[in-house]
Length: 289
Ligand code: TMP
Image (cartoon, helix red, strand yellow):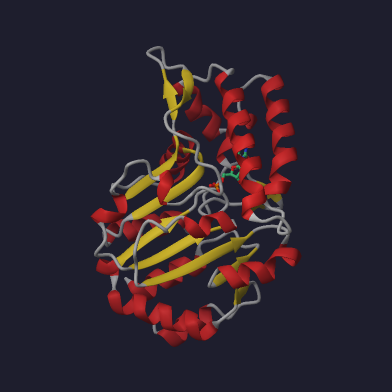
């Protein structure tokens, strides 16, 4: 696909671009670099997965457990936590500095609550298969195409790694070019969950510090083009550990559209509003690969 055709693809009522000349330039540079120079960094919940399907909300990975067979008392407490903290996470009037202590509070309480539930490793499969968590339309094509060209994909999530892997395995394929950095559960010998493996990754510490002692970005430092995909402003920092020449930031704005659109247009190069597909990134891959 030519750059002109690609810009036409972006010319849709739900696709918003603050600076079209900049976007055109970055896409041209990424196309020129080709697949050998490319790396992808993507958030999971509501970026690779759907926010809504057929008018109904879909689960993020924490909610997969709430929809599953956990005790009612857990579900109620988890819902209360979300009703308290999610509006803070998405409030465009609060600064990230103001939000961080609240997010640490949320993840700490949510993880402590999960530890009381005696979750078994086996139950995760069932929770996922019976949940409303759904990969976006076109996500399998996206993963398969990136595998064909051996483009590394970092999925960076403040969700739960075990659940993300299970969703991908059930609805698509977890290829060996894909790497997940997230909160992973710890299990004892009987397969019961006893806690989490590393320090908390919450929505606003998804930067290089959260890739625990990892040389992920160093190993691919010759890949100087990055496509970064996210749905929150915290996701913008997911690629901070990599020094790249060209970065295209694609943001999915799933809710609070009127109050957040202008801010998103300043922070993300391309903003996709209320769309449950990966059509825009997939069209980009058609041009680059
Ligand atoms: P991320 O996928 O964008 O990295 O963020 C994970 C999302 O999980 C974030 O929007 C908040 C949400 N969440 C819950 O729904 N329930 C919880 O218990 C916690 C800790 C987070």
